[in-house]
Structure formats: C-alpha cells, structure tokens
Image 1 (cartoon, rainbow, N blue to C red):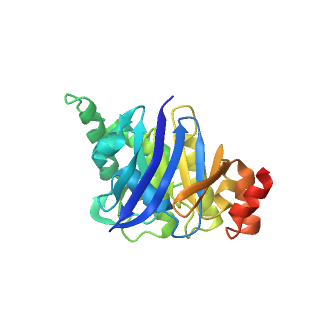
Image 2: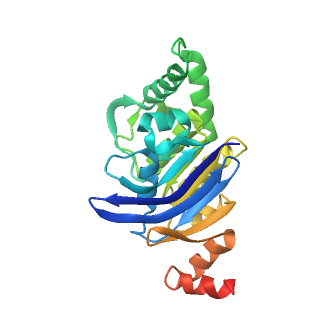
Image 3: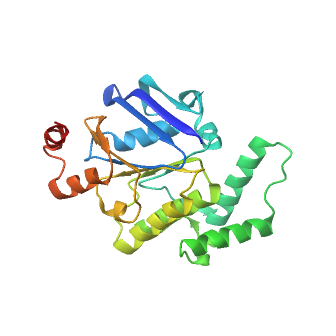
Length: 257
C-alpha cells in the first residue's frame, strides 16, 4: 500500500495565497473526491502536486511513501507514480496518440532500467486496443493527433486512456466531468472504476455530485477558501447537491453537535 500525504500545504500564485493550510492523506485502494466552488483552490492543488512552476509552495509538505514530492521535477513525480488528468488538455498537432503513449511508456521503462529496449510494437498495439475497447473509444483515435480538434468529451476520454495505459499509483482528475454529457461522464467514470484496486488511488476534483453517481468515493472532502473544511462519506456530496455551498460550514457544524 502506497501513501500520498499532504500536510499543512500553503500555495501562492504571484504573491496571492490560494491554498491556506490543506492537509490530506490518500492511500492506494482508496478513491477520494474533493468538492468545492470556483476559486477555492482545487485546480491549484492539482497543478501543485504535479509541479507546475507558476505555483509557489510557501509552507507545508507533500510526501509519497516518505519521499519529498516537492523536491522532485514534474517528470520525476510521474515516474514516482503520480498522474494528472487535466481539466483543459492541450492539443499537440503532429503527435499521434499512439506515438505519444508508446513514447511515455518507453520513457518510464528506460528511466527505471537504462538497458530496457522498450515495449515491443505488437505488445503495445495489443495494450492500446484493449484499453480503447474498455473505454469504448474508436481505434481510429490511435492515429489522430493528440487532442487536436477533439471535442471536450474526446479529450477527457484520451486523458483516461492515458491513465489506463500508464498505470499510475495515484491519479488526480481535475474536473473530469466539466462540460460533459451523461454518456461521456459514464465513460470517464468507467475508466476510474477499471483502475480501482489495491495498487491505485484516485483523487476526483469536481464541483458537482453527478460523476459520483458512477464512481462511489471512499471519502468526500469539501474545500472552501483554500482549506478542507469537512471530510466524510457520500452524505457530504448529497448535502451539497441539495443545498449548495452557501452556508455549508454552518450546516456541517450543526450536524456535528
């Protein structure tokens, strides 16, 4: 069992503090959901965990099995088992999905063993087709340029396809349901459920309860003002769906009495 621990994290952007003392412990085998309104720091947390240079950590720590994540470069974090599914994935014209994923797999293998020859083309093709079939993605996707001209739903499917192919220990999904219809949300949820198990931990960042209809989280955390103000089970998501974020802290305090 691997453990990702965030302790008293403070993060600023251009001198403005966005995350103000956030603590969270995740273990493989668990699915966590962070819910909160716009501007509360959810995406800032995701980018900070993966090492985006625009986000300055001013206090606190992040460790993965005791190793200092904040001291790692972004590629080192990926090699350690962290993965980020972006809210707004970038297009990369000229690079096919198949070439991108095979290069990513081989980079990881060679970083672990410089003598590794990389995944055989036939083995990679079988792996990719299997994962595409599991996600109900057309095999034509393999030859298309990464996210170039893709719809929002197609981009999210490709992010989940990357997750299935690269098999991270911890995946952060930044608003994977943003702008998607129900069918696309179900496909994204299916990808998370396919990964679910003792060797995988997931963190779903979302505004809404709807994706949690299809991925049942073990823990739900409510984030307001740069902090996690409450943690619990599915009842938190249902409360927010019914009553919204306004007045949440007061409602939660009354229930805790």
